[in-house]
Image (tube, rainbow, N blue to C red):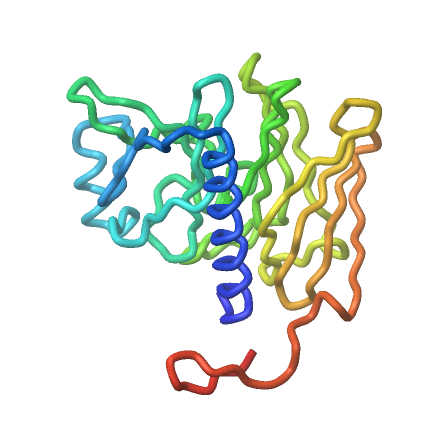
Length: 243
């Protein structure tokens, strides 16, 4: 992740927190802690899988950080981007264990988290859920840090009510570049009350807005000079850094 991408991400995260805080304040309600973690753990298939993964480097605890969170019908989904190696599952649902610990259950399955399998999720940072249809719109950059395979970026639409994949659209490389994209945020646009378009920010080497049309199952993009970072330097903690 470049400095510019990191600053954009921090700004969006801070803005989201401010909007949530403002909404809670307006409603006159106090926020309460639902889940909290000092480190993440997963719902491993077998007892020995966790220690085996730690030993072989496919699970590095310190590299697992939650960034995206969405709620649907009392279910909580989170993303753990593969910024660094050692992230076993990039899209998850929060679950409670018998001893009341909150762990992450790979969503929808462990098989969909396999690095190097282009049919599986490689790097998920953001998703959106349409509350009316129960469809989760998931964006995957196609490249996991530490992986050797670069897949095409894709958008997967998953029906949370019926538990199946509704749509799996692989972006052509002339729309979203393989290995150099940074698909970041997604917004759903409605036409006649139904979800039709997804607008996705790509802050990779060539910044753009990627558009996915659900009705036609086609994608295209827009870009403009205003999407590029300003040239020059900025000062952070008394240090000059390139924008």
